[in-house]
Length: 398
Image (cartoon, rainbow, N blue to C red; front, side, top):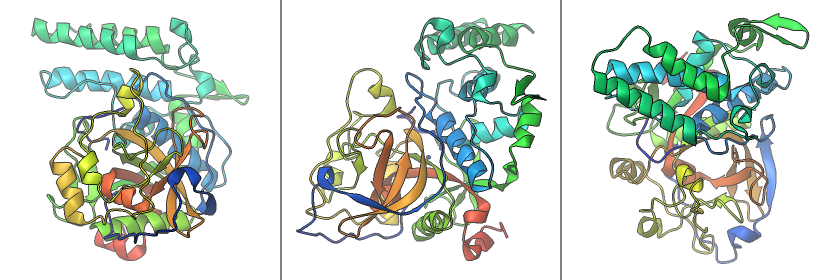
């Protein structure tokens, strides 16, 4: 899961969580952490000036899954997935006369769909990021304008020729490089499909989970956000079970892709890189500053207030739903949660890997409180084997 809109990118709702005040607790900038449990991960990447966190986080997750299964370290190509996804999204945009949005954002399911339908390839099989337009990292500002303008022109014509898709695809060929049909990797020849099959992952093992009350629990529904343009389904859990799944997964060596709202002032993007929910969060949550998109136009994220002295807000199912319904919680950003840590006061945090390069105190990593995850998660992508059996049965996954 770019973003500050409403999607299905969908990247945790919450277990009634009361974190008691601690007058002796230190400010986030002074916290020290000890790892409790962590899943294996690959290196931090940099999505740079692209709204493709959904792709970076999902591939990071699958790279972690390969390591968990005893496989080797891979660097999977984001450009391959983005290229395929943008062409598919353009077709959906035109087929619905523009009702399906066209933008850089997406969902975890876009990557899963690409792996199952088109395959995957290593970074070495695609053109180096940014090289075709004189950069060394992704920069989709121009290609997004060009592609969006092309589609607007097609809609204005009101009639499509058989050539439109070739013309549109050539835009991404020119900015990201042509899609490889076969390549060599470590001395062996692959197609994207055969390479994806060689990774040792069963794509049918991965499911999206969420927690909202406007649909029945233990059912599946389409999260109503614009970037869920493929209308992917998510399983709906009560907040306490949603959080239970996350803890169970991490304690058993599984990571998961995390889609969440990171635009709040109390999501610290600088300095301490610790995200918590202050007791008075409702007074400060209505802000558009600090979203992933705005990061690229010069606005910095909010400073994390000194909230550990007062404790955190108690997150309920109702509070979480209200924030979603009021557009306070939006589909901003996709990340990877890969572990649990404790601060020196014994409080647990989730360990998060981002895709903004080696920024901040922890060089691309951050610590996210359980209250924040309960409040601001849109959805997670997880291996269904990482779900406790009693919950999996309720979802008919066992």
